[in-house]
Every structure is written in C-alpha cells, then in structure tokens.
Length: 486
Image (cartoon, rainbow, N blue to C red; front, side, top):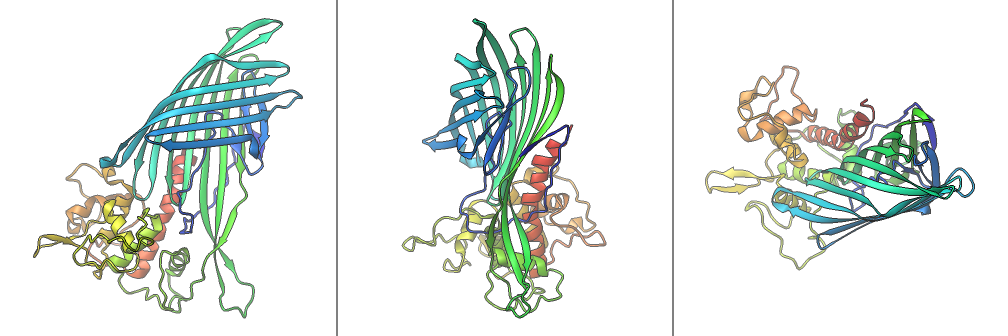
C-alpha cells in the first residue's frame, strides 16, 4: 500500500458476476470511521489528534472486526493495535456498538438503531498520550436496509462527539472531536460496495479548529476471465475462470491551523483468488453472435444443458428463463433439495413439483419476482412452464428482482417506444425502467416489440447484461460517482 498526495488513481476492470459455490453474499468492509484501508498483510490509517496527519500501521492480525446478531440485537466490535512512525508511538482502540433491529417483513425492510456503548482509545505520539475521557463519547448510529431479491441496499448515518485528554508539562488539556458520517452501499450474492463519507471537526486545546473530510470505499467483486488452452491437441480450446478481487480507496482532505491544508489518498487491494469453471462444448455456437454470453452462463452454472446443442435461435421457455434468473441472482432458496421428507409446496396448478430446480421457482414466487399469468377459464394463476418468455415479461422480471418499480413515473405516462400502446399495463413500468437502465433496448425502428418471444440466445445476452448491471453499474454509482464528485 502507498500514500499518493493530491492524486487519486483507481483502476477498475470490467467485471462480470459469476455463479460459484460460495453460499453467502459477498461483503465489503469499512473500519468504522477511521478511513483506514487493509490488504492481505497491512492495515493503515491516519490520525489528526496532534494537529497534523500521523500514519499508524499494523499487520493483518492487528485489526479485528466482529458482528454478532441474536434476538433482535446486533453487536459490532472493532479492535486494533497499531504502531506509529516513531519509537514508542502506539494506538490501541476498542469500539463497541449495540443496535436494536426491527424487521418490517411486509415491505422487505429492516432498521438497526443504537449507540456506541463502549469506547476505549489511547494514542501515543512523541511521548504524549491522548486518551478518551471517561464516558467522554456520545455517538449514535442508525441504518435502514431494503432487502430485495437481487440485491440489498442500505443507508446509514452516524453522528456524535468524543472527548480526549492529554498531559503536557503536567498540565491536562482537552480536545473535542465532532463527527458526522454517512454510509451507503449494496450487497448481493456476487459482490458489494460500501462507501462512507465522514466529516470531523477537531477543537484543539489552544482554541484552534481543524476539519477533516474523508471518503472511503471498499468493494468486493468477482471477475470472469477466459484462458486460452495453448495445447492444440487438447479436447477443448480454453475455458473461463473466476477471479475474486477486493480493494479499497480512501481520500482525505484536511485543513489544520498551523499545519495547513492538503489531500492524500490511500489504496489497498487483496491478492485475487482463482477458481476454474467447467468448459462448454456446444457444437452449434461456433459463429453465433451470442456465443460468449451463452458459454459464460453455462460455465457459471446458470444453464446446465447436458446436450452438445444449445439451440440458440429457438424461443426460451418461461420455466428455463425463471430458473436461470433464480440461479444468476441466487434467490436464497430454501433447503428443499436436502430435505427429502419435506412436502414441496405446489405454487401453480400446471407446474410439477418434481421438476429439477423447482426450489428456484418457489423462491421467485415468494419474493414477488414471478407472479404467473391468469387463466381466464378457471380464474386461477398459472405458470405456463412451456410457454415462451416474452420481452415485456423479461423486462418486468428484471425490474422486480431489482426492486426498482417505484422508479417509474406516475401512472399515465408513455414510454419512448413507437409501439408503446402494445405494452401491457402490468409491464409498462418494467419496460420503462429496463430501458432507462440499459438492460433492454428497442429495435432500430424505435419499437420494443413487447409480445415477441426471446430466443435462447437473446435471453442469454440480456441475462449477462443484467448481471453486469448488478456489479458494474452499481459499483460505478456507489463508488466512482461518489469518490470523484467534488
């Protein structure tokens, strides 16, 4: 890791989410309100308690973060022991938050509100020790999380004060730090980004005031790359592998009387982890425009066709499309596969509960991603598993999974497509938002063609674009757009 004064350099690769065996969502992590960053070996942060920036570091074992949740309570604890630039310089810190959780299952949201319940910190610099005054901290925090099928989104606010004391020539002095912090982020099966914006006002013992502004962003992503096989006589030409990457960037701007103002940036990245994927061997894709999308989804396990022929130009069924979406975003299916004694819930009269991957259909229905169609003869909702997935249906499914229906204009609006009148009322919001997000577009004549079936190739291409949105577009919005907005 290194510090770069007055310069921010971030290299972000084009990343595709992948379907791998990790059963839990990915998680980016920020170290409370320190602005510190961590790689595989080193943690570093800067403190400003003396009126100038002082760097403290420690190895990976010097910093621990724990989060426990039980019976509507969350306890977050941060512990670190760091050393400074000079002999004897040391920082020890233990931070503990206690939060009360409220779940609002009807709307898929939760809140966590509480306070800093325990705080102990000692910072020794050049022989002077700065310590938190007994009970000299009053910090509260609150978080709201919107739990949606494809991704969870959260927003957190932290505010309060903390009071330090130190002795110089036998005289005790006090320093008051006022802090305001906001965290925004998302978390899904394939990756996460958490970005924190913190402002601190430091009121020094001599009456001077310093300000520190920090933006720190931590991301965890998975990148899909292709490796060509150099052996010409091999049974396959090459295949995809997964590269899991974690990185953090932290920007500081300070204004300290007697020291001046300035900026610097910290960067950290962890060693990527590699996992090889299975090799597709379809024989009907050699020159097909959607070959890469299809093979990526097959390698990821989203498609599990055992045949050597994918039939890219045939329409995709509603059953295959729903299962593919369920696997692609990991709908947190119930453990129905391993519980053979459990009776499977029959959710549609025309859908056999014994079909492979049935649990993905159940989860999609329970989470409101799939609602089925109305059988006007019986008045019941049916699934029509062998029916073809239509373009307007696909757009609606994507937007429901993202939970972005509310982003559409007030009812009565028109989309920009020439065939707007052909779009079903239930699908209008989905088509509008999918178009705005770049998930699905119209043809060269400005038509959306809402009632046209998606071929298996077209479905593969839009699913890949959907996965790219979940990682690439969200990370751009939650990281780069905030870091570089001055």
